[in-house]
Length: 230
Image 1 (cartoon, rainbow, N blue to C red):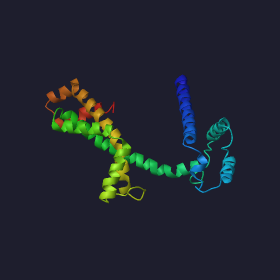
Image 2: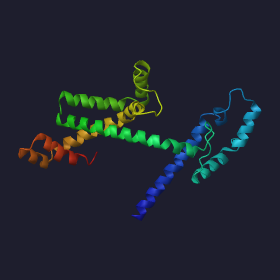
Image 3: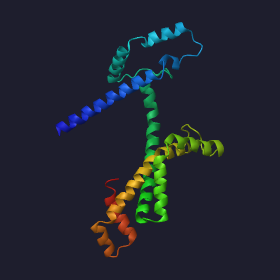
Image 4: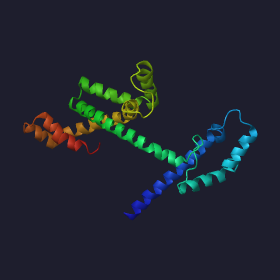
């Protein structure tokens, strides 16, 4: 058990280290970080002074070691865009992120499981083909493209939903649909496969042989055992 915990801790530390490394170099690859927040008409002298003040004139190895050391202490520096503590900005927006994620997760299961169950119990029918066709589309369509299409039709053309912000329930509709679409498609297909496997088990065949109603066989016996891999 101790070896397993140490292994998991080591893997976690490695993932964190690699994530910090990727973030550090991605910021540098995007261009001069100083030019991202300074005015377009600023003088070269002021640009160099800002680089010196923020430490961007130091060798890359020095910048990287300082970045990792500060992150290890919980100091993620100052946002170049908002000129505020970066960690505080993240924590301020964390509740909205969790709220959006939880809502999208709930929507995922509310949509995916019924589609998967209906497709499995109506295997080979039009309902099955429609459900699995929608699941394939959900996995194939890129989230950014789906988001743009939703904004175009429901915000720009129909004026039904806001394009952004966190003002109320209407603001959650499009982001939740985009977040849930891919995972709902995967879970729907997984649910269908799991239910089909369970329907061939002996206890399900026995329940049907006893003359139990189909909804009892599905709801009480099949779903409970199909939920394990889901």
